[in-house]
Length: 439
Image 1 (tube, rainbow, N blue to C red):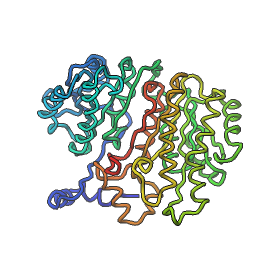
Image 2 (cartoon, one colour):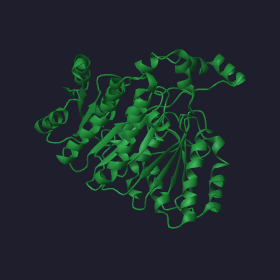
Image 3 (cartoon, rainbow, N blue to C red):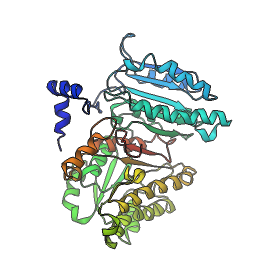
Image 4 (tube, rainbow, N blue to C red):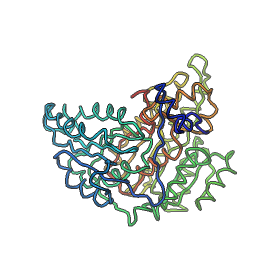
């Protein structure tokens, strides 16, 4: 659905009124465009930690360049070596002179050391403080710019490339104020960064429409053969999506008792193993708890959570994802902040987060990863049907003052599913424009 207010605010007369009246000012976001570089201008780096050299080499390889007096398109700061709270002054010293010159749709990334692996309580304190700094700065930069904190465990220095490429590019347009953890990994660098999933098999549930369709399309763009899964009642739409992507359609009710075994048979018969499994299928049955029926509760928990557990059990027990598989599941900001009338939905989506956190260590021991994305207000047919005032509140209550697009969720999932993202596991990444709910 068209965001008429955003279109007006981005026009000449609209910009005048927005600034004059202090109204929400949704910027025009820079999203991925074919052939564009990962970052479209010069990058400045500060700090003096253990990532200065590897990150510097990565930025150089991405071709970030521009006139020396040009406004920076990216600001990176290596805070991995800050030993105590007094050393946090280095953040002010680097960012204060340059932050106001950051170009529109700029990218800011601060690198830290995970507080739980620090050598002393004071070092841990300083590293944890970085979260407050980056989340606050993300609410200040404006003009479509984003700010992220990336905690890099010792040994994870060489596993950063896929994450840095994502965060610096237009693919992360609706991701801001996030904390991402990267650890050591056996790297699988792709032959081509343009099609990193060439030869891979990706399975996407709920692929017939909306966000699921966008996920399938992006994974296909990245080179994967996509198996599009949805319920039989969506068979026509599912076939259209699969045919357009030169993928495969699989009609399956994931809540059926035999769904895990049917999936297993399909994978082993048609592909030997899959490389990526995306749990996107989900439903809502919104009612306040006192008015909610048993069926409304049970259906949401079954589709959104219990079916994922059963499918994951089969994927792992039968080694259907090979030795470096990726599981990505779709949670929601409702699972983090809660939402009136969504006790069933929020319970299921919080459970998805618990599932990721619980499975990550076990899967990591086998070279596999599991992560979740948590979308906020995304422009879909479902949100278009909301009452106008609720829809407008959802759009404006984030640091970017607008709703996201299905492609924003899909791009984030493609990063987490990337062969070179082996060091990224156990993360829950919000795709919400830094929603003010639960922030």
